[in-house]
Length: 86
Image 1 (tube, one colour):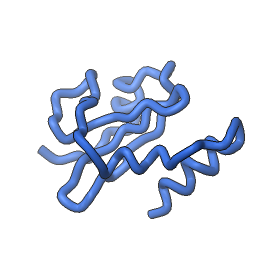
Image 2 (cartoon, helix red, strand yellow; image 1 turned 30 degrees about the vertical axis):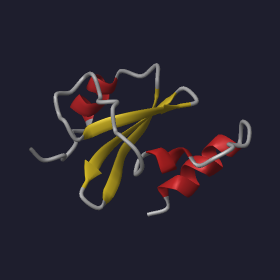
Image 3 (cartoon, one colour; image 1 turned 45 degrees about the vertical axis):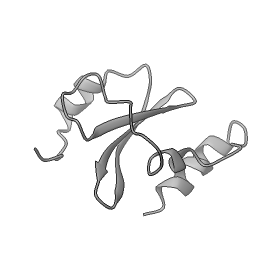
Image 4 (cartoon, one colour; image 1 turned 180 degrees about the vertical axis):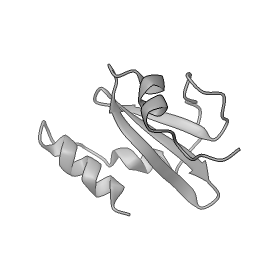
């Protein structure tokens, strides 16, 4: 999956990124849990006003959604539920 490339391409339309935003998903401590949910493996990274919501897995991270920060995340999930396991 070429999610990092897609995000870089998307962000390059406004200004070039000095480093890959997705490199933070698979490195270092994952401290930012998604406040709307009580799921310890569900995390988010804020990048240029967007919430990159991802699920930590044994072999890396799986990006669930890239959502503008002004959007209601709970409403989006109610419209289109996620399969994130227990």
